[in-house]
Length: 230
Image (cartoon, rainbow, N blue to C red; front, side, top):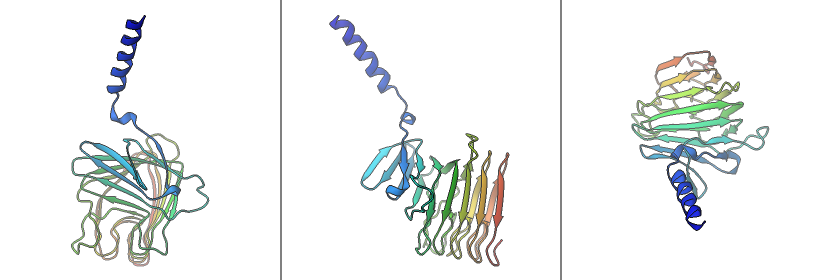
């Protein structure tokens, strides 16, 4: 009997050890504090406060989306890595600050899955969902040639309304020559992007460029530039 129990224990242990890292997935509440997702070639972690946890499929949500939070989401994908995040019913508003509601960093690719209705509004000179492809002045962290994909593969009627602050795009670059490039919107995503003054709905911030922007599948996109913006 003891031998059978020992064998059963060893089998369970082997099964646990063989579980892929992707089995680690959790729900993160942005109203509890700023959230940072870091993806490297060795895996993906999520940090909030003093807690850092391996998580390849984090769902970022909010307990009460009727009340906006000023906490932010930063997604950093290292070169040759891919970060995967689900936004599920968040309402982030950083007006009155110099913060981006959602910021993409690093040289790798980022995939954002949309579940439910999501609204992000950034502060001055920052894009609603900020992806600065290049920044010759060195004032904003660039995200290189990595691609940002916004999608709704789960077909949950996922939507995103992204509004840039003054001089920032709805989705793409902030000011200070923040080019917004390598952006794909696909699947069944419904996206509304509005740029601040002198900035594009999707593309570059003030006096900056936008390129390599793709809309495909059944995606529904409404993009509006700010005053004198594309």
